[in-house]
Image 1 (cartoon, rainbow, N blue to C red):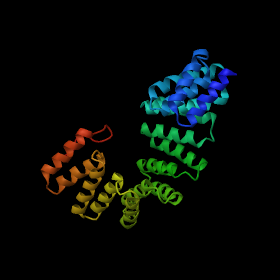
Image 2: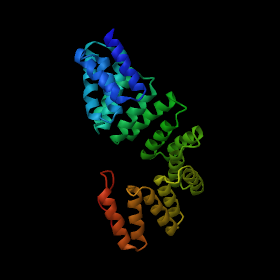
Image 3: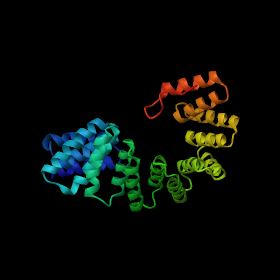
Image 4: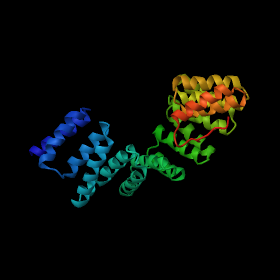
Amino acid sequence: MAAERAFAEAAAAYRQGDLARAERRLARLRRSLPDHPDVLHLLGVVLLAAGGPEEAAKSLGRALRAAENAPRPDILAGVLTALGSALRRCERAEEAAGVLGRAAILAPRDADIHFNLGNALWDLGRFADATVRFRAAAELAPSDPAIRVSLGEARARGGDDDGAAEAYAAAVALDPSHAKAHASLGGVLIHKHDIARARAALDKALALDPDFAEAHHNLATSYLALGRDEEAVAAFQEALKTDPKHLPSLYDLAHLYSRIGEKEKAAEAFCRFVKEGKESYPDEVRL
């Protein structure tokens, strides 16, 4: 009874957002129940919420082994889901996808599991597989606009602009105040050469969030499509004013400066891009 009361207190502290108290309660509880799957599971969830994904993954890995040995099928899907999230936070996407795939088999009607699995597959560059999972999540949680945005992004990366536009439009219909949905819709409409509708979507995104770098970047791209280079430069600069490390804006601005003969500015923008660069972007820009 004392252990049950201590666990209930830890769970209550977690629900109330008092992560430190929850962790203390669980640490004491582990002295008498070192391999209890519920204790290890909750401790892992608490550690993950507190910003410690490495320690969370260790605790959740122990919880998984304990749940499999007990056996405790009633908590297995939840442990796998939390472990998958922790592994993804640790940038161990391959392991996260495997763990979350097991969770999806155990709980095929859980939208969150499909969504998290879609994110892990996205991290691996498996956009077609991510699309399948995001679509499943959207069917299970039809009123969630964030899932529709992720579905749109996966479809766009897979080259399906029509499908991406459909998903983004659905997100906007579900939540007209979702700035990212408007900005993403504007971006894909530019790819579809529907500049008028793209501009309307981007204007809406910026009205909702004037400091949204992605929306400024997409607006700049719309100006490029119209041959309005000076306005494109101004929009890229606005994107970088709101987010100085916005890599797409640095990259595209470097190219634009080079094309219009502003070689020194192009070199400066490219050097900033390289400094902040990530593996998903090219290593060189021809200036």
